[in-house]
Length: 192
Image 1 (cartoon, rainbow, N blue to C red):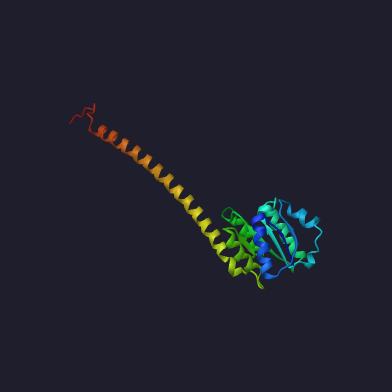
Image 2 (tube, rainbow, N blue to C red):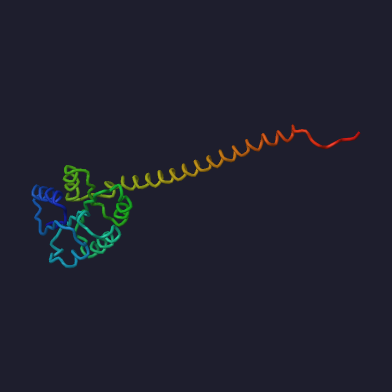
């Protein structure tokens, strides 16, 4: 059995896949909600569920709250596989990294409807997604951190070069002044 919270488009994809896989949908919701409130107040017997699909576009909680809620929910209901649909994953790499650290590997990145269906099939399979399936997100996060480091380094180098150029210009201005002083006639009188 499956329960889900999703947008209209993702809801259609979920229903289609469930029909193909002969998975019974126990509860469905297609509105913007607070996840904590939903889990506490919904009259679902979670012991009957095998899958809980959550589209993060429909959730009003922050990413940290979502992780905390899911972590606590997973402690209570270990048999339920939580599947997350994550929109705008470029801006949420930190969130995905925290999910992986907490043992949540069944998430779907939105890139188009076909992608959702194939990823959902993988998540609903016997073994679901494993650490091996989501390792590339850790690599992307690491690359972004390194590129950010190199950008900062590049900015610092440019600033130093600019300062160096200013110092060189000042030195170039001082040099002609010093040379003109050497060549200028002195007012000293030397007696032998």
